[in-house]
Length: 444
Image (tube, rainbow, N blue to C red):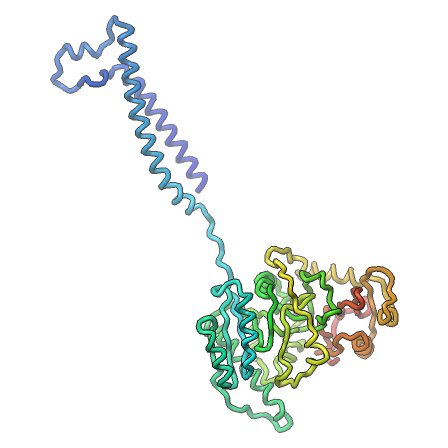
């Protein structure tokens, strides 16, 4: 378009100059202003057009003619200029490359019978940068009237949908006490189908009704969505660090993100393509542990932060507060806004990250448990503490105060068997020996 516009301008200039050159040649024989050249003129008028012996008079008449012609050309140029102001915006609009539309990332709030969902929704609405880019869909199970009233009080700020099947689920006798887990799994399946199939969204961030979000919660997911879409070795982005208790994270590294082989949940983003893979085999219960099985994970990783972007305040639930009093209530929620969308996150791409991470871990000084526990480490770190088996990992993790359970062989926050955390102000990598190849899915 720019080339065509330049050619058009040059052509107009050429025609304008040519036209004026022709005019100059013709003007020598043109009568002065006020004289007529129409047929029927007397011979005296014709003679008056011809050059005379009065050279000064001829020059003056020629100057008058040029002046009149230049005035006419000036008027024409002014008209062209006035039309140009109308053309330029249209031309520039055509030249502009249309920016791709910003992605819409809905927030799916899984609710049941907690009226404290208000705390969750208040924080989401407080930090939400755009209602159009982040519609909030509250999916309620259980049919709890008071909770429904709380959700309805938000009016059109949220979309309230209700899981229609509130019946009990037939389970074998020994699983009767786990009825709640079956209903949660059924609810997740229904709600995610509503988001992806009924509402036709291409991605979603799932939070439960007992989560509070950080100020940069939305910024974090907007920035990591392109990574999730482009890296086939990723299958989720989570806002949660399982070992993210105060004192176990570096408060100066709010922008630091990791890859992890462990599915964290608790505020996580999923793509429609992943749901299309998972939905046909979605489990009847215990969906989160099912997600952590190697058959579902398929060696893919998630992104997780150094400092959590969600905080759980729900001690009571179907898990009856499991881990809450010992770990979850002490998770540090990020308070610093990190402009992730303006940050280069290419270091998180699989090959780049793996090579860099392994180099840092296995070039770190290897230390003993006693030195870590007693704070007798020399230098700023990082340091490597090596475990040799599932049992040795559990002993070390428990004694150091980090979560010691494994799911299908994967430790919480682990990446290639390595768990990163802070102990007494030093970075510690609890790591397997060099040459690690794969997890043992029978370990738990």
